[in-house]
Image (cartoon, rainbow, N blue to C red; front, top):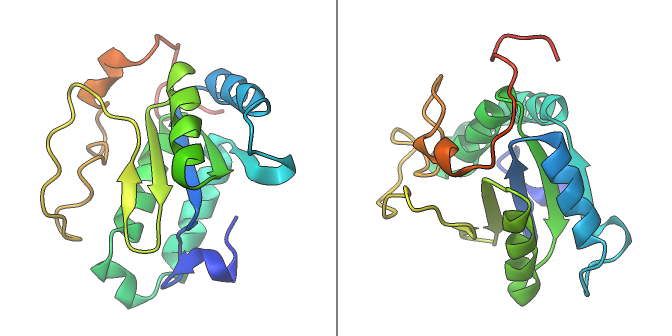
Amino acid sequence: MSEADSTSFGVYKPVGHVVISFPSARQAQAAQAALANEPGLRGEAVRYMTDRQMVEQVDTDILDASPLAEFGQELNLVKAHRELAELGYHWLIVRAEGDLAVRVAAVAKQHGAERAQRYGRLVIEELIEHATDLPQVTETPDRGLDAQTPSGKESERAALRPAEKRLPRDAKR
């Protein structure tokens, strides 16, 4: 997943992509199949990642991160992705910009996506809003990203997700 042109101070930052989290593999795979019919997406534009693959990617990113990564939100965001992956979330990374990114997020939401984040050069934009989301406030590395799931706890947004049977956090996958 990491490529030299997709990192910011050693942390994965896929500019021009939408990173989407799903509570289950089934939901991510259904969205991937639906996106195959989306005009403007071709071939390898959609990449699927399991929960384990995301944990491995984040761990690599954290090890490779420059001390300068602390000044942006990329490091906080990958840590939030790791927390979700530890809860069993699966991922789609979709090469899409502009209106196509918005359409991708709409398809993902129909299939139960928790988050869809569009990566721009300077801004990472949330494309799926939830009724329980608080207005975005200033972010610092100490405060974390607003959309970050609190460590060790399921988000209040879990009540809004389609019901899925989950393994306990420490269960073998």
